[in-house]
Length: 124
Image (cartoon, rainbow, N blue to C red):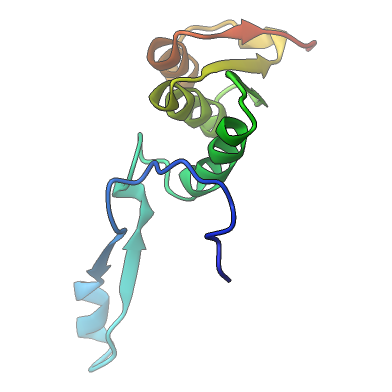
């Protein structure tokens, strides 16, 4: 599929690393298996979530938006990555998270620290 017709904001620094599964290949007697390492690409080990965000950010920027808004759960990696990617793109980011997410640790702390924009909304 040709994706060039869609607005895109690049988040990956280069091509995705591809590595051989050396130990498994040795066991399979001549079969060569490789793994695509999205976990080492782009922002914060975002992988496939960043691929989607490239297009969401691209569309937002193309439409003149200044803020990204997303909804997530307590330890949402999507919310963390949306905040980080938005900051990189120069956009504000509002995260709508359940009220019981007020603990400042783990993914929640990392999101708040990286993006500087944090909104607590919603019910239990």
